[in-house]
Length: 116
Picture 1 (spheres, one colour):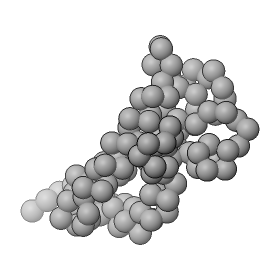
Picture 2 (tube, rainbow, N blue to C red):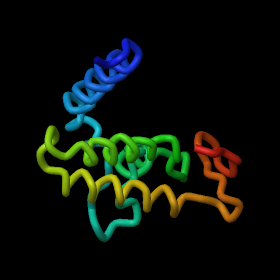
Picture 3 (cartoon, rainbow, N blue to C red):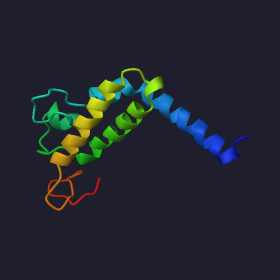
């Protein structure tokens, strides 16, 4: 028999996964998905689609890659895990391209020293 905290963690995890699956179309719609585009993998829609005057992609939006990678890791319940893996990888690669030489990223302001 599992202890109460373990059961609660498992049940809470299942609730989070179900919520993520419900919102998966919205999450993937945020991502730039043109393979040859300079913003390929970017989740900051204001940057790649709306061309807002900020001039850089906010690294905070790239955290969606973590959720896609997790969903891809629980393969049986998701379906098309290969697509999720490719999207997560593209998001991580864009995240890496956004980093400054010291490893920091611009989260909300240009030349910011963020650690997202």
